[in-house]
Length: 472
Image (cartoon, rainbow, N blue to C red; front, side, top):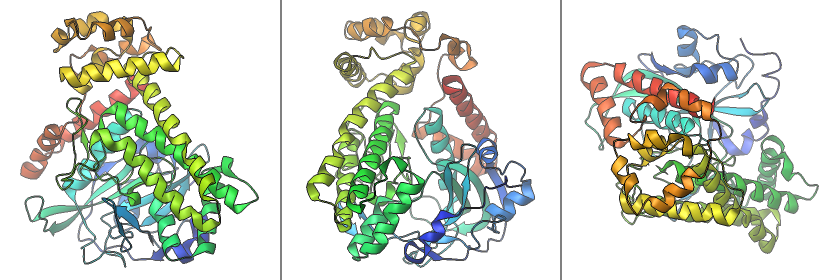
């Protein structure tokens, strides 16, 4: 079942004595597979699992052959809405397994809703089925938009009735397993620095360099830490540039929700923008708008500064760590430019000033016109090759305005990168697959009322078609 050599190395075990606690999964009364990621199961050698096997390993969490003998709940701290909290950790999840994909990359299988741990803080350690459905949708849609993200791997309904304050109760329960390049968080470093565990923090630096950022290797620990910070800064900048081009609002950009490989991770009250609005906030409890859409690049830089502070424990010089943060802004800008062009299916000019100027004009028009965000990227995918298609759009009138004329001129000056993609069925539709909050609620309603999963499955099929149309 597991490919030869895939279980030979479980690197997390080298850190388990100081970064995690062995835990037992919850004993759920029922198990019903509601989502299984066939494509990524194939990438990590689990394509042969039948339904019984899926339930055994991702509902009861029987160890995968040759893998972790017992789940590990990770320990970490973090800044939550700017306030440092040393009482964090995996309170309703754990690291279940480490696998390698076809390219040999180390990947983590982690859970959400798998039961209580030493870090549960009086919580029940469970996940609502609706919460699991929302994460399956969001991660699938992010991947379809080309955003670096954790992947929902399995969602299993577990037969418990949960009490929650933010949705009708009692509500159905589930356990989610997600696949990430790494579950190591900025808060993992913060905890070790806070506890003055310098030797352990050095071991964590070595693990992250060896497994995820080998370009950061250096015989000297302080230089290694600075190199690692620079690599993480670049990865984080690229991720947030992708968010901004995709119109994604994470919602809770606490430092424990950033991982060291620059993947969208631990998003809760996420949203996708209906229209461009820099002040759009995803979380109802973010009353000050700290994590509002337009502030996400600033918040990403702030989170990296907290990581840099933790790395002072390695003996790295503060000025050197500050220099290691500098590439973040350029990585963010380049990613924002590149991903906007990729989502429009056109090539950048290669002249940074011209490309940034185009983005400034484009997004200013998006905000002023209140054009539907996903519709614009659908209508103009392919640039000059899509002028007639855009003219037949439900919001074609916006494209005939004087305000749009300078933007239109620049779009039409660009040829499509891969014009053959326009033949895909997705681009024959007047409207694209989208994932606004009202749509999510409409998908949940038939599940809650009649256990009807057909609308959700159709939406996931549409999202997969969008991924294929844009990137495969």
